[in-house]
Length: 370
Image 1: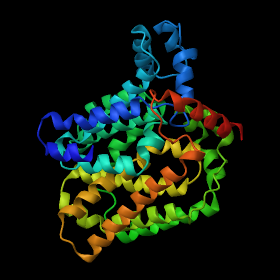
Image 2: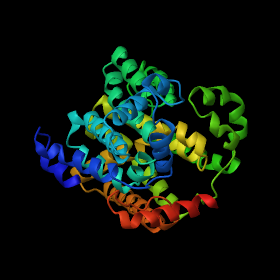
Image 3: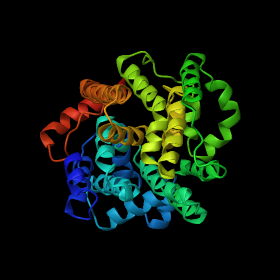
């Protein structure tokens, strides 16, 4: 994907579409990859089978997802075509969001894959990631101060996931200034405070204020488990590499902003920093992790921008260190994905590798029986 996107070199030719096709085929034809894969198969094959479009609308699913399922049923397409359609939608929207900054796109593809977000997010919370990609497309209208197209795209995102309603107020945070976070020292203080908040565990207090919002955005099923936290250490090698990469980006943020010198990047950076703070503040909490996905996913976007900056800018000591920090974080994320795939649903198997399906099914059964 990286090689073909670079080959395109910002022109409208076939090389632009090869990465889209590759992503669609590889991730669309996956079998039992992602925690929610089985849930979506059951939705398609059992829960919504035989329903009219009107009956589907009465279920808990959003209309955008229902339209895709209904059309697949109407055309009598096999289950894997549902995943193909959604994967194609995700990557096409990501491409459209960066169409005017085509030189960045290869690096965004690179960080999407190596950060693990392609497998752990795009293949898992599929509807919400479609909404996220629509939000990416909407941000340029916030930059241009065109509120109507922005609202319409947020409404389209809402058609794929109810939680997209939280995106509407984002437009107004840039009303008075083009960039919110301009002081790296202040950002570092906030960043380390969010890391320390992990040890305080403020979730219980926060729930008292946002429980109605949680229900509004469609996460009421998670409230009973809102206090459940994973036991993964914040000081593990993967997390420490990620912290170092964030510190590098924050410290060099003003230099990177001057390099790009456009308001779209400034908005991406603001959303990235909000996502970084949310990630560590709610570390290990699934419910809040999903609600804040629209911000935490900006990590791979910002790492893509940062990599391009480091490649194109003078090789000063800070830039080399920053490049090494991000490379280390991406390597650690990808290595973790590979080494832990036998204990998770992340091991990739194609729909057409039928001899491996039983192994994946057994793996999933063991995982969820614990």
